[in-house]
Amino acid sequence: MTTAASPPDGSVDHDDDEALAWGDADDATHVDAAHNPVAVRQHGGRDPETPETSGSLVGFGVFGGVYLLYTVAWLLTASTAYVADVDTMLTVFVDVLRFLAIVAPALWFTVVLRAGRRRRTRTRLLWMLLGAAVLFPWPFLMTRSFG
Amino acid sequence: MTATTPAARRGPSPLVGRLVVWIVFGALFAYMTVQSVGNLLTVSQSVQAFNAFLQSTSGGDSLQRSTPWGWLVLDIAIAPVAFVIALWATRRSRTAVTVGIFLVAFAAAGVLWLDLQLFVPRLLDF
Image 1: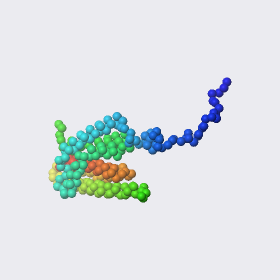
Image 2: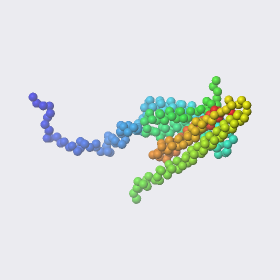
Image 3: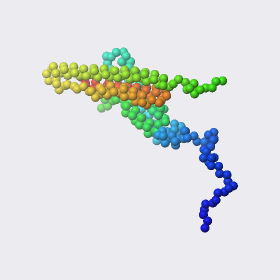
């Protein structure tokens, strides 16, 4: 009975060095490890070129809607008197904060999406959740009665 | 034709731009903290004066108020905590991203600060 293994064929050229090379970097099929989404994911981040999943888009959409409601609520409480009988500098300071409170939800949403585009979706959604807690328009609830 | 060195292409160090952002927003956060400290002193003195007045009257002890130290200390802590978080988040960021994150941190700290400016007087209600 003969074995399945065949002896080396002397007519075939076995170039070991060529077998270990990945090929030319200018080749269209060449994959650079530095831009490989798999390698990026293994380091805890995400490739910014990768399209968002539908789940993350829904999550960001929900937070976008919540933040939009926050903006409206802060806009409706823009005339709230926070301080009284104070100097001009503090009055200007409070007015600046009043304006920033209105644009804060949009700012938070934009910065999390732009500055965190290399972060994982879960990390960005957690930052969105933190923003929803921090930016909650308490003055809107405190200055209105819903009974 | 001269060769372009990597240093020439890179331009000025981004650390300079980030330092300017850190200093400007540091001053704004510091002003917010100073106002919070002033708020703590004003509220605690008002509560003391109110309680002293009630003690001078007959039967007014039940109306005495306690100083909301927890909320007042939280009011002071908001700005430094927001500054430190923003500083940590921008330790390796570009200048534009640093500006954006500090603006968001200042806006968020401002929102909480305004919340407390409205909430603390309602606790006292005198």
